[in-house]
Image (cartoon, rainbow, N blue to C red; front, side):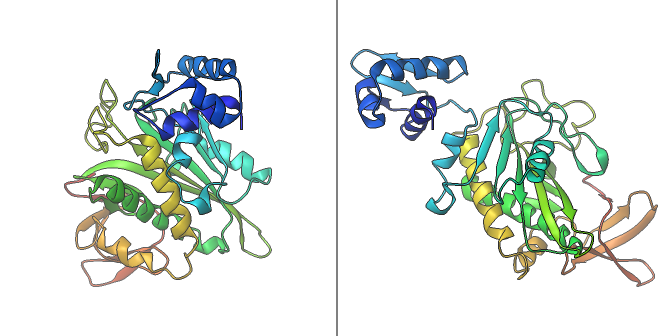
Length: 324
């Protein structure tokens, strides 16, 4: 770990409080000049650090820049050593994660970006990923699942995000099958799972789990095409909850739930958080209407048609009256 990273870790640990350069130098076993140099580097990156004589350095409590150091402060000891790679900007965190997965990156590796220039959603759609107001992250997972069970990862991720939001903010989110997280009827998060399987064994070689969270409303609002359905966890300010804190909780919840997919216990919670069950839906592209009645054991949406016939929908898209 570089001196800059170590200094940032200490400043994040004591955010809002002052720590002297002398104390930092002694704690990190480096010179005062090295501390000063690291502080200047961090300031250039946008960190709001106040330096005062006789008080030392203080990272402003309202500074909200994603960093591996800031995220790891909130992770349990068992997850401190996972690889977390944070970028100001990427074309797509999923693309970066897929490339790393092909090169052998370990299970649990996480890519995060403060902005995506080519964020991707389901069915080839773009995912709006403006700077400074979202959490865009992708996990590399190597679960013991068959290709047919890959859909469990998406439903598990939806629960992980809901749990993280509720733990950090106490707000209860709902799920619109299969991959949208809703708050007060607006989409605040999308999930995209991509996987590669061994054609002979049918087992997954790896999966990339992408999660995009609308953390705060962009300064200029959402594009007109998104205003009807897009929302954010917070307004233009995050009410004292930093992105590092929420990102850490999503990581913790996602890795925990993805380690126990076979039991499928989380599907009970998925059903209880469903914004779909019991409601009439329209199947996009098929011009059919049905009622959503359940979530199947593999995460499928169970539909009942007017003639009483039932069907399990493993993929596709639905519209719900009053939502989108």
